[in-house]
Amino acid sequence: MATLKPRINITVNNEIATILKKTAKQHNKSVSKVALELIEYAIEEQEDIYFSKIAETREQSNPKWVKDSDKIWE
Image (cartoon, rainbow, N blue to C red; front, side, top):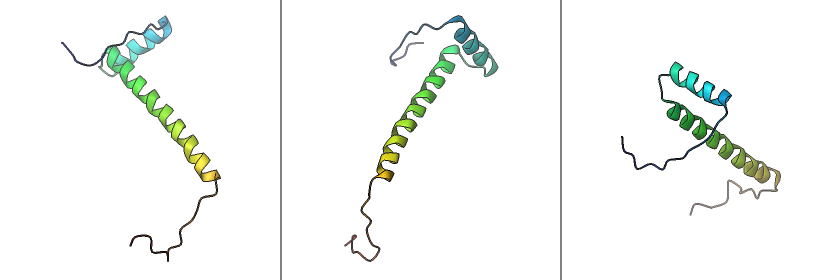
C-alpha cells in the first residue's frame, strides 16, 4: 500500500523487538502501528513536561492581578 507519509527506519535491540511483537499480537495491530503509538505517546509526554515547566515558572513569578471592578472588556 503506497503512502505519502514520511518513513523512518529504527534499529532496536532484541528485547524491544520482542515486546513490540507481543504487544502488536495482543492488540491485533502491526508492529509499526504499535511503535507509532508509543512514539506519539512519548512526544505528548515530552510536551506535557515542557509546558509544565513553563507553567511552574509563570506561577512562581509575581503576576499582575486585575481587579474585577476594572473595566477591561470595554
